[in-house]
Structures are given as structure tokens and as C-alpha cells.
Amino acid sequence: MRNTNGRFTKIDDSTLNELRRACAKPLTHPEVSALQQYSEQTLTWLLEQFHSLAELPVGRTASVQTMESLLREPAPEIGQGFSAALGEFQDKVAPFAMRIDHPRFLAFIPTAPTFLSILGELLCAGTNFFGSVWQEAAGPSQIERVVVDWFKEWLGYPPEASGLLTSGGSEANLTALVVARERLNYDDRAKAILYVPDQRHWSVDRSAKILGLRPDQIRSLATDEQFRLNPRSLVQACHEDRTRGHIPWALVVNAGSTNTGAIDSLKEIMPICRAESLWVHADAAYGWPIVLIPGGKEQLAGIAECDSITLDPHKWFGQTYDAGCLLMKEGHRLAETFSLRPEYMQDVAPGGNESNYADMGLALTRRFRALKIWLSVKSLGLGWFRSLVSHGCRLAQLSEALLRQLPNVEILAPAQLSVVCFRFRPDRLVGKGRGSEDGINEFNEKVAEEVRATGQAFLATTRLNQRVAQRLCFTNWRTTSADVEQVIQLLSEAAWTIQQTPKP
Image 1 (cartoon, helix red, strand yellow):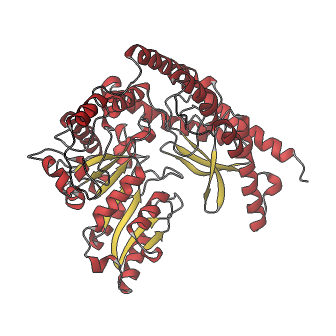
Image 2 (cartoon, rainbow, N blue to C red):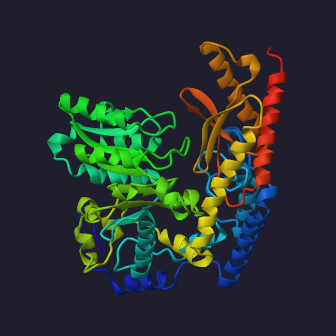
Image 3 (cartoon, rainbow, N blue to C red):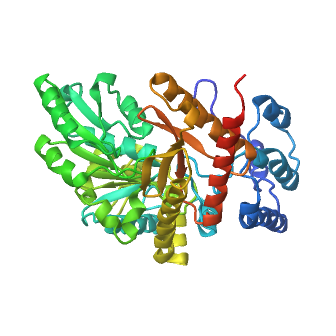
């Protein structure tokens, strides 16, 4: 044993034997028969939720005071048992959350995992493999390599490209920009300019902040009437920045923007970027699966020329949270940027063509995220996922067609990918000046609130050119035409009710 001076002192045989006895058995844990029962209870509840989801409310929220009264307590010294804890989860936790995989949850970018992905997540947690170094996880590492290679093939990336799975698009975007920055020496980093479209995902700004970029190093570029990056604005910005002594460094493009599903015209943009020596990162977190269906590769034409690409299989590819991905065209750059070999990891240096994913990104400890993707694709077949993408596109087209039949509805962004944006323009509010626009904005915010209050659907608004827009996004394999018509009916009824309500 060590004394107060840090020196080891010999312990007597009696103490040694006492330590042996104290450590002779593992800690007590529920027996296999009990665990079987707990597992059946859990799986039964999950399957019931999965099967009856369309008939359930979309979900509800609650105040902090309500949740505190339900769940605030000190940690119990003696456990109450799994069944009781599961019952509290079912009664006090699950009811106070939105069911994002509900067929009428159409806000943000929803996710609707297949149950095969859920089972893959169960296997991932149950095995708890350390998916970071080849030596400890050759099988899991190879599965991740296979899944990444699938993505590369579908997007047309070259064999020398590489990639890894991440927690999501935010981590993937940050990782890509860290790699891109490695091309700059330390003196030039203070002069580097990052170009971003005004329709970018906010994780790009967060990544820039983490990287230490000043606000004046981020140049927001205008988009056109279809909310796509205007190439002329990029040319002008690069010229102005070089004139001022700055260094045009990197550009983030949208390959399926969150707001409208817009895809920037890479065919027009890439020649400019090569002339300006810009690193081009494509944020395709939402839109990338479009390449799986006829005509989709044309929509994403040019993406294979990008230096890096973000994908999120947990958005439009039927996977549970979390499942993001970063692809790097020059695959060697990942390890060159992130690989470190401290003494305690000297035994796990990869050999030959082995992949140490801990050397390729931000995380050292990594889950076996690839398992659920691999398992669901192997089980269902890629054709099922092609149908998923086609289904979302058709639902967006259907919703736009139905909305165009309604009076006082203005389509602000026609269906792109699986998103459509629109607003109500009541006759009494239409006029000239900022006042009428403010009134229309307020009206549309109230419409969305009224629909959410019904519990039958969950929608969220956004802003397009300062106009509040209703936005529908379809990524759910459960959503049907009947759901679309029900949501539009709810919207119409809410708009009519608000219009008929006299102002106080």
C-alpha cells in the first residue's frame, strides 16, 4: 500500500487475504431470468408504441414546474427495481416529448427510424464495442468502412476518399473545417475568409466560432429567388477580400438546405472555387439521399468535386439518432489532421490498411454507429430506401398541389426535395407597407400555434426574405396522403378561425 509520502509499504498476509476475499466475487446484478423479463417488458412497450404511433397524439410539452414536480428527487441509495423505474419512464417522461417519428410531425428535418435500425442500436449498446481502433474492433471497424464506402459510391466519390461516422451534421461540419484549416499556416489563419450562403445551417456558424474565426472572417453570400447561392456574389466577395488583403479560404454550399431544400448549383460554383483555390464543403446532411432515385444524381451534379461532404443518415435514411457522416475526397487528410499517438495508445497504431477511426476525427471514444445502418440496409435492401426518398418527394409535390387550390395561400418556395414553404395572405391584411407584412407574419405564426395546440400535428415556421413561412418537410415512411390532407385541413381551419376572430 502507499503511505502519505507516496511510497509503497508491504502489507501483511492478513490484510492481503482480506483484500482477496473482498474482491473474490463480482458485484451483485439482476439474474438472467430477471433481465429476460425486463427486456420483454421494454421491447413490448417499444413495439406497442411503434405499431400504434399514427393513432397516438404527436406529443405534448410541459412547464419546468410540472416536470420538477414529477421527476425531482435525490438519487436513491437502494434501487426500486427496473419494472418500477420503467413504469415511471412510461408515465412521467415519455408523455412529455414530441414523437418526432409521428407521421404528422413535419417540422424541422424529422426522423423516422425503421425498427431494424432500432434493433441495431440495441445491439450497439448491448455489445458496447469500442469502435475507435482496429486492434480492439476489427469487425466493427470493417462495417464502418463498408458503410462509408457505400456512401462514397452512391455520391460518386473516388476510391482514395475516406470518411467516418459522426454524432451528426454539426460534428461533421466542424471536422471538415478543421481539416480545411490545416492547409493554412498560422499567420494566414487570421486573414482567412469563410464564405457561406445566407441559407446555411446554423451549425456552420457554430463551427466557425469553435475554430476561433472572428465575425468579420465569415462572409454571408446572397442567394437567388430560388434560395440558391448566387455565383456572382461569390466572385465579387472573393475579389473584394483579396483587394483588402484577406485570403479567400473555404466555401460551404448547401446540398439540400434546411429551410427550403434548395441545392446550390455546384456546376456553376466549382469553376469559381478552383480559380480562387477555395476548399469546398458540401452540407448535404439532409439532401444527400436524393442520389438514390432517378434524376437525383443530376440534382446533385458536381458534388463529387467537393473536397468534403456532410451526410446525416438519421434525417432521410431511416436511422435512429445519432448517425452523421463526413466524407473527405483526399482521405489521407483526416489522419494527417487528427492523429496523435500518446504513450498509453502506443500499442494500437494501425498497420497496413487498417482503419483507426479515433485517428480521423474529434472523438477518441466512439460508438459502433455503423451497425444500425448496415443492419437495416442488409435487412430491408437498398430498394426500400430508394422508395423512402421517392415517397418524401411525392408527398411534398402533393402538398404543394393541394395548397395551390386554396384561396389566400402563397407558395414561397415550391417543393424542393421533400420541403415546401408557403404562407397565408388574408385579404384583410394584404396592402402596402411594412405594417401589412408584419400583420401577415403574425397571422402565420398564430396559425402554426393553433395547429400545434390540436395535438394532431406539429409544424414549425421559418422566415424567407423576412416573411414568416409555413414549412412542411417529409422524411417519414409512415406519412400518407391522408396525413397530408389532414394537416392542410388543420391549417385551413386554423387560418379561417383566426381570420374570423375580432381583434381585441
